[in-house]
Length: 119
Image 1: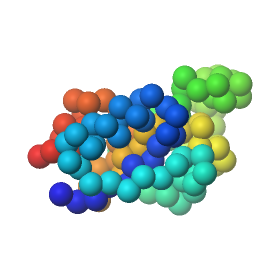
Image 2: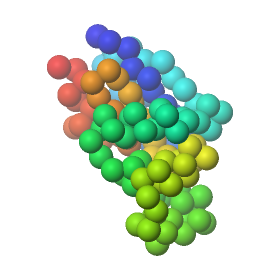
Image 3: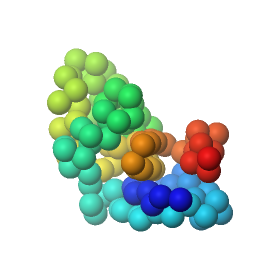
Image 4: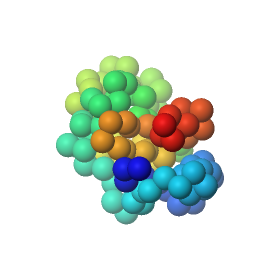
């Protein structure tokens, strides 16, 4: 099985569940701390394009920073480039975990969606 890049915030319970799922399913990955090594604009641009989802879907809408910046109301008025700039500015704005593979980009942990990795 190919190796994945697993971008996580280790204190996040959802990230911990996702890590355990990867380990339990013997899926090889390299871990990256989302705050200490925040994805840059180029990485985000590539991943968003590969995911087939809009940049807005990569925001951690339940995060304190998202709420403090009032992004629920501001985001629709921002261009995709402006949204990517914001995501690249602070790892805590990014929905986590992110799982990046050659053919797949997953944001958030939904076990049913991650089951595809075992195929």
